[in-house]
Picture 1 (spheres, helix red, strand yellow):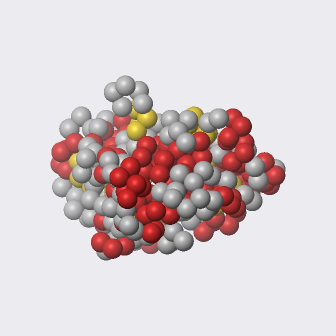
Picture 2: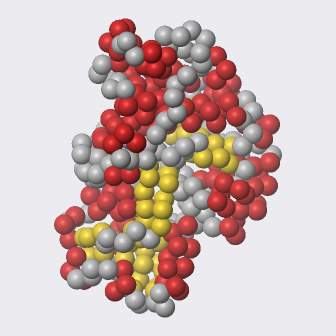
Picture 3: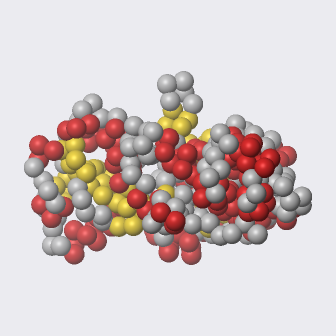
Length: 338
């Protein structure tokens, strides 16, 4: 969510890695591990469990890419990133892919030398306040102090919103999600602004979650997904079709529990192709025939990933909403596997 003031320098850095990006898959295979830029302090997206293992929807898509490319979802090195360095670590080649709750925008698409490989979460920016403030609408927050992550497009959206409505606010910028969360819960600001899933994640770890409310207004769209460097179409397609594979699996009723049986005897031709029953179909991607099977077997389909990270089986219990499959009224949609 970095603002345009840094884009020129970052784009110049991207030029220097274009040749490197052309061999991303071979670099990963030679290294034996996927390097994934991720979060380590955001419940639901990327944060450690009680054993110190990272969990979350972004983490799971890192693992899915590792399963597709290396046959082992655990062959991932997670590289913690911040809003200020996330694009530069990808442009420099320090990571192979960036999956850390980052919104796709026109400026980022056109000026960074990077490409979004798909949307894993359709979200929107919102506002969280203490319930005892009695606030029902954002329009009641004139003069409020607002906790913000610097280098995010939320900063720009807030400034635009307040100016358009003739309102004033006091920004409190803290460049660390955990520190920002503590600042809000300690009462150092009136409002916490961010993606609504992020707000729900932070509320879930509050000392008293019921003391906080997320206001109904949605400030801006936040389509979130994996990002890769420009110049490597093969790698772009691998990351893109990793997402599609999880969606196609859910759409066809394939999950981690039944994938073996489905692969052995499902009469659906698309399922057979998806699970590797057509030799050589994925040769152009440089992947084994069973790459999608490995994703579903080791990580799960999209519904499984969403539910345990953000949905009903997670502490956040966020409804899928726009993240339902297209067959159920949502926006999640994958092209045919032909």
